[in-house]
Every structure is written in C-alpha cells, then in structure tokens.
Image (cartoon, rainbow, N blue to C red; front, side):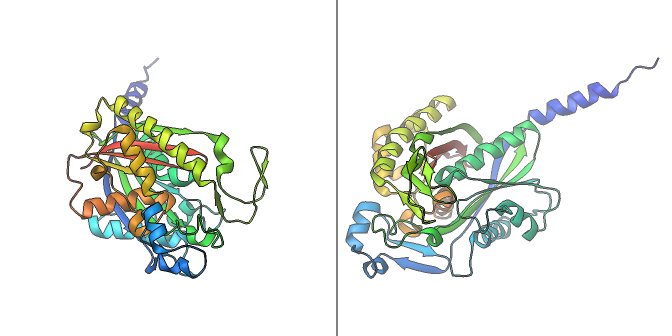
Length: 341
C-alpha cells in the first residue's frame, strides 16, 4: 500500500505560519472638521476655560457633524493611511474595530467597513472595551497573526462620543471628543510588537458606563439615559494605580527598564492621570504623548491619534521603543510595547 506523504508537508506549512511575527507598518487618523473650544461649555454649564484646562489639560476637541458617524470617521482614517503609505488594501484578511459608539449595534462597524472599502474574504469583528479597545485590537491582531489565522489586519479605534455625551453634566461633558485612528499590522519574519497585557476589573463596571437595555450593573441601579455616565474620582484612582502596575508588567515581560522606553502613549483621558502614572513609574512626563489637549478624550481613538501626531512631529523615530496602554470602561485595559519601524 503506498505511503501518504502529504501530511508532513502540511505539518511543515503550519509550523512555518506559526513562526510569523506581527509588525505594525502604517498608521493614519481622521478627526471631524468642527473644532470646539472650552468657551463653548461656558454657555451651557457652570464652567470656564481655566477650570477645564487646569483639571483636564483639554483645550479643544472635535465634534462630528449631525450626519457624520463612527463608520465615516473610521473609513477616512483608513483611507488617509492608505494614501499616505501608498497601500493596497484588497488583501486585508481581518478588520478589527474598537468602538462604543456604533452607527448600529448590528451590523458591526467592521462589517460596514469591509463593505465600504470593498475588501472581499475578510474577517470582521468589533471590540467593545471602551478606552482600552485599541490596545485590545493590537493584542488580538498580534495573536491572529501568530496563530496563522491572518496575515494582514486593519486595527481601528473610532468614536463619536459627542453623540452620547450628557451635556447637562458639567463634570463629564467637557471631556469628550470625536476621532478615529487606524493601523496596519502584517505578518513578518521579524515583528515589532513585543510584550502585551490585557485585563479587566468588572467590579467597577458601574463607575463608567453607557446605558442600553438593562438598568442594573453589578446589582446596582444605573441612570438609563443612553449617555456616558462616570464616577470620575473612582476611575481616576483605579487608572493611576492599575496602569502603573501594568506599565511595569510590560517592562518585566520585555526585559526592559523604564529608561529603555522612548515614548509612553497612554489613553488620553485626563492630563492629571497621565502625570500621576508617569510619577508612579518614574518616567519623565516629557516622554508621554497625548492627544487630549487637541482632540479631548476620544476613548478608543486617543492612542492612535497621539501616536500619529508624535510620528508626524518627528518625535517618534525608527527604532524607538513605544509603550502603549489603554484603560477605561469595563473596567478594562490592554497594552503593548512596539518598536517603531
């Protein structure tokens, strides 16, 4: 009886695919045209420009037009990236979109982008991890490539938070803005996405939420107005303590010290949070990149916005070690160390 020799060949093929690493090769952003400065809020709530700047670091933010939605921002960020890097997208085989402001809950933003960009035969998945969503996208993209399931992935963070902001709440309405960022992550023999972390503390879910069908979280009654509600003090305390820990976890996993990090790109929630994390881990604040002063808190879009601006300004250079760390509603967090290519 003849021997079957196809199996070893298939096995070798699978082993080779598992050896592929993940490389972040391109980045693009988009923000709506409408610029909203702090004086806007003086007309609707009891606040002022100095109060907002001193407590948050925010100077301006962008608001989407009435007929402009998350899918539009995400699509433009991807197209801007494709134009800047002269990319072909027809062979993208997975689309990941981090957002909490879907145009519709169903179909997903990823499916809508697959249709709009005319990319056939691709996986499409939304990530609901709020401000930690882009970090989760990086981690999932790396995992898909390492597993051999995908070779070319679009990872997007996009939000239109102005559409779900409670403009009667003076403590939160001043924070949020709209924007989108996208990166391309590809299979490569030598990758540049290193150590990763993911995690969650669901016990804090009632401290930062966007209500939908159920009016109870963790046994507590919530405000069900389809707007963002947050307990700023609790989220602040959690973010500083937990993200300081995860910063050091990433360093340990990668075998680095804080001095090895060229740039820290945390979620741009509040400048006071970023300053406190830097102080806790011993990183000079000058090494932190933020997007909140210009774009406000854009949730899942804040990290790619800050990273892109850092690259465009000539700060982030080839070979720099960049630590990305997102955190927010869930409460959830995710991050990675990337060596910029």
